[in-house]
Image: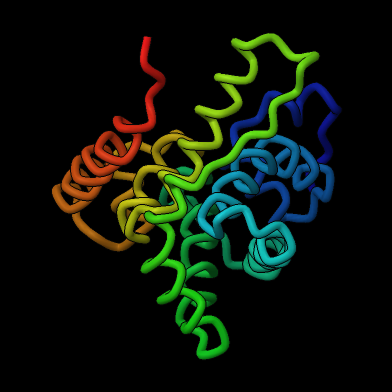
Length: 201
């Protein structure tokens, strides 16, 4: 078992932390979790159209998969790429499950129409600019939810996880050009959805 001070652990790379955790340093896991919990949770939550109960379950499952896989961990890619690969596979399992297949089909058919139904409750105590910003954030979330799963996943991996094209390709199991295509068409579709919703100046 390695022995590290608190400062030593905080200064380690993600990959070295995971190796240390594999070798028995429990505190290394705490640092990894603190570094990645926010981005990973947002990625899972937005993939599931902000369904918190299911997102919490899958989020915990991903970390359990990491814990169970620690003894076989080798540095073959960035830690974040490996972590989001675990998350991507867990989401794929969820969508493919017979229990949720009907929901997925219905969601993809209706999500885009829901974008135009966004309603924001006006709070007189809030400045108008805050209201507009909140409305735009909600519209963006709804627009991302309306994308096909492959485009949505590519965009969220880029924006939430800050992964490169090559890393997204590794996570999703496709080539770099396919990732570029998914991002390009996803962004184009987002613009098409959001453009009619922009406030008139």
